[in-house]
Length: 156
View 1 (tube, one colour):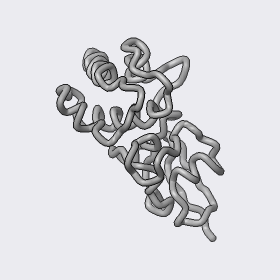
View 2 (cartoon, helix red, strand yellow):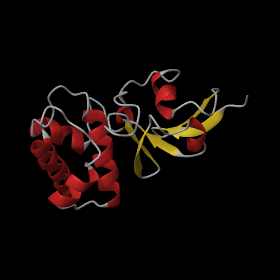
View 3 (cartoon, helix red, strand yellow):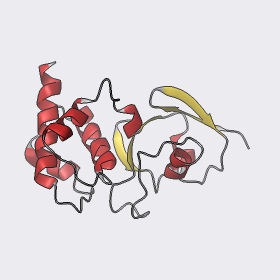
């Protein structure tokens, strides 16, 4: 079985795996990237969201074959400790995370939004994050953090 080639966090990657496995399974398994979390397994919670192209998708329901030759960005590719993404800095500054289970998926949904719309309104942020569940109740701080990151990115 030939490998599936795609670009993972900007690096050309090839994985020999059954093409019908989910992207989440490939990310967490052979690739060892655990930032995208398994939540519901049914595209209902957003904990596994990653960006494919410029869209946030649920990796739990994305067949691995469908990312062939595409760009996939995970939370590990968003930023790092030395150079965090503006969203990561804003989430810390606004205290927009508690348990952290949902945060990577929310960050990826927000990053996809800001790629498509660098100056969203609060209503647009809420709409973009509508499919992301946060059981800790940090929604208002999350929206503030996304708007803060958008402002920081616009000021660059």
